[in-house]
Image 1 (tube, rainbow, N blue to C red):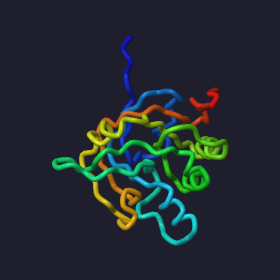
Image 2: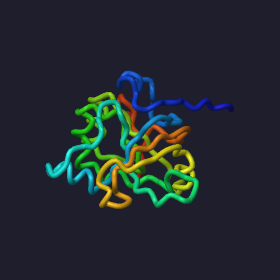
Image 3: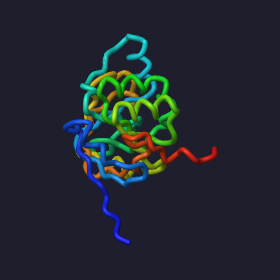
Length: 179
């Protein structure tokens, strides 16, 4: 059976452009995304820093890339466990963040905030850091350079494969899994 992948470009023109996504859909992301992990989320939540990019209509990828090899803009950049950011995430959706990208399930507060904001959570594949790194066309540190791999990167990507983990209606592919 031929399966057609959906394609989404970031930043999205509006959250409405995500409304037709369904949990389990396979998607290729392109455009610009930003990396941010635990330490950046904590700094912002504690009021010691501001987001160094516009949240509205953008996507945050939870990863800490390795140094780039010669000829590549970014090294391996596999997803980080999303649940580690759950305590800081809900408010970001209400500030206009369109999507987060990471691995594993999210808590119920995050699922409800995704639904209420009409946003989406994309689940990336663990163990595919080299593949994801090969989908980065350009990358640059835009903030928190002193945090090393936890710095915030602006990354231009093409055909970055993910699955819709939680869709804008709140449907969740992780809902019936037992851990």
